[in-house]
Length: 619
Image 1 (cartoon, helix red, strand yellow):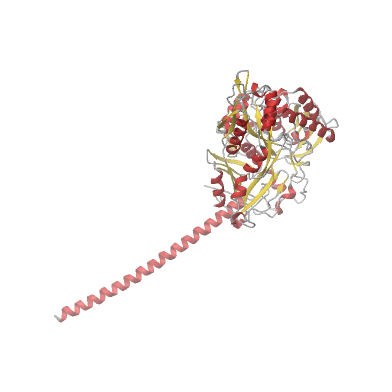
Image 2 (tube, rainbow, N blue to C red):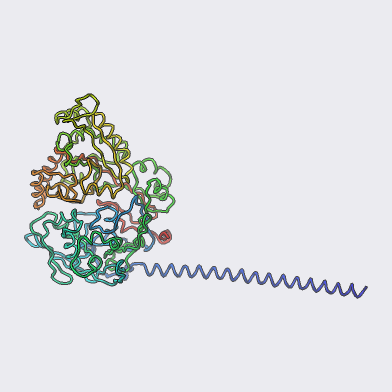
């Protein structure tokens, strides 16, 4: 019995000892495992930091110490506005309400595509941001103009490279291809080819005779006759890559160029950013070109990635902006007034508000092939029925200005003495009656020769302001006895209808350059050209003569006088009801530095983000 007690006691002590020893081992193991996990986590963090550092080193432009010390502000366009101490990296995501059918700006005049090419391709020279009358070099090392003002001699910088790419059709990889004089000749040849859908651009080059190649880096641009815009057109010229668009044997095929769907889904340029991807219906991505020639001149943009995020609804855009899912958007006037009173939009808040005059205008265009609109008294009456003051006040909250013609109101070409047609239903009725439109059967609708005054107003569906403007217009038309139907379409359908002149009237807009040539919109030679900008089919011999004189006049004072005379005739003819020029209303995340508004608007290539506030690109 005693032996059993003794044995049990010894066994119990041994079991306790084993249990304590086991606990010690487990604890020790747990401590080691925990320590190993901590070490592993620290190693991953270090590896991540090293990778991020490597990425930033790989992506960063040359530092100021690596740039040539002799660079002066006039050696390259807008050098003075770049912050040479800016942090490199980060992203900027801009919201867009719609995307495009293709990326080829030669055959696609959509503003989004033009913006993408501005990022991805450079021109011979560029206007100074602060002084738009001054051209400064970009691709060109220098240029000279002959005494007769007909020949420009262009000398290109050496070593400018096209973006590397893989041909989406052949699979061939192209690397380190240099930009040469032949790429500019190819641009001219493509534009002038009657089989290419380049009618709007072709009108600007109608007086350009040819490009004459001297050598790999020099060429002459020769004009047939003097043209006051020859300098700006020549210096704004950008090359296009022949090795992409003519990557096949035989002669260039203009129709193939229009419909080369796979190649027209990419952008190959020689600019600061290169095309990085297009996720249909979601986003378009650009990334900084590591071999950009501008690096050594100190004009490489600090921001690494540019993304255009497709967000169809403006309210969704502003929600994404506040959540910092996007960085920039264009505000509607309604949003500017009603949605920016929160702390996020106040001084030193999360988001900065920017406002500047837009170089564009809205108008109602009348298809002059339609018998309803062929009498100018009818067109004048329709303008009298358009309450522009009400539209500006109620739809644009006063953030727009009434216009009377197609010249930008901030230039001397615009004749300020011309007064807008006032809103007056009585005056409209009087003009319509003089043109033979009367309510002969007392049904409230005007008629003439048995035909009722009824038409359809076409608009694109991507502008919510039209949903407010058009019902106002419809109501005013009805008060004068006119039936106005409203038809909204997708942008591509809208553009096609205008190009084929298959519509009654439309509401749309045009952008304006620093100096305007009325030829593209108003010359009779363009009235019957498919896809031309004279989509209303306007013809007027007096206007034609004025346009031709304007185009060859180098005397600024005389040219202004000719433009004023042009303005008076257009105002009387009213082929458009000129509506207003709105303000550009921009919302930009507050983390960006070096933000400046110039006469041309916001310069996005000079802004940057401090390294501790940079955000990565979307997945």
